[in-house]
Image (cartoon, rainbow over all chains, first blue to last red; front, side, top):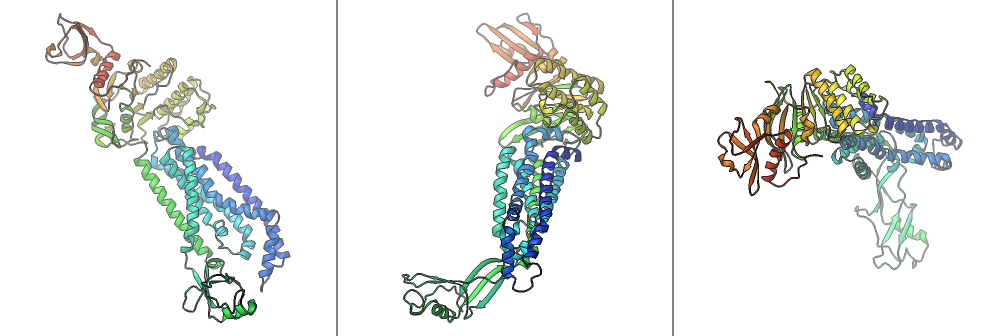
Length: 337
Length: 293
């Protein structure tokens, strides 16, 4: 059975291996250039007030071919689950059912549990190994940039660490399951693409509930810095205040200005202090706002939650994959002949 | 006589559609059994139940004295349209069989491939229909099954390829003594090789028996209008056709019929099977029968 699995899978395996090796070589060989830029920009070794240096480093590193590599890396890891589902998962059983060759295989001295188990196990492991390798190379490569920009920024996060492995394994099992249900390779590939994309978009929205969210709350200081927007014709005299979140809040879920009672603040503003008809300039308005006893409340997920979130999300994805795999074993015994 | 397969009220339904109904059979071992019936009669379903690919909806069956299961070394199966892996070469198929069967007879497989003049490096997808069927048969018999099931193996083959396929099959039977159950919707294919017959029409078994015995006990009776009731006891009319002046019956009778009022002729296997098939067709919705492809 090992021989058959390998014989049927070897072309796809070689294509996958070439792709992963190309990624590995591309990122591991250009890593030194990125580190050089970090050193030259003064970002490496910076200990205090590094924000300006960091943004300078990111700006330099993101221009030129390194910037392309950065984007391609993220795109590659975000597309990988769909690619695995499409080309490794969907045809795996669908192609056999389409050509009736499953009946040839099951007429040999082998149970269909072992037949499916070997295919799911071997190619599932290959999926995890290949994705893990690519993700490791890209995560390591991008680590100086991520350190400057934050690890848990949603799109960066999904293309780093072990989460890509979870999505790729899920994509593979989803492909196998849909192929088994539809029994048509091309249709299964199309549906797999839709389902994998839906799963990843779903992950994007559910992710924030996987760890405890942090809260930052502080009284708006007298010298507060931020934007004010209001409409002079508004009879309700609504005013909106925007203040940047603190640096610790890498992934900002909500950023609001609240009154001392905790309600969202939206005015009314005093037309004598703020707006077109106010006597003083914007500083008068700012001072007036500061005197309103307002608070900034930021709900966020910080960098320190990166690995907790990665393990939890990957764990959930692997559990979902296992459940689907169990369904596959059940289905192939009961519903396929 | 030992049984290769016995079934008790075997029924298989796909949703609301009944594929096989109340099938009670005793398939003797050591025979080449023809399973004949029109398309959609339930032949494939019966074969897949026997080789354990399908589970019955109701009833029970025993295959070689055990419950059926797929993946048994004692049972060989060549599925409909003789599937092979299009992307694998002929040699790969032998390797496939060797890896997946402890009982694999590599010499037998190699010798057959050589005799058939198949190129081991040829991709199976590029083989002709006849060669593909031969390859599938080779894989099935090289595991040396005691019971070999073949689902319409020659349906898509030209007459020469049919003859060669059946020859190969008979050689294996002669050498191994295996029991073979082979389905077809054409009696002509089975006539040459089968010594036992099961006629399946519309999910039901119509008649089973040793071919020679069936031929000896069935007669074509013609004469001026015959009342089927008056044939006497022990005689069953299988099929009757009446015109204004003449009747033509197919009668099953263990004793010879010697009534001077009728002409009694022996019947060939094809007409016998057709009699059973058309009897079923007339008693229900009409089904177009193919006498010759």
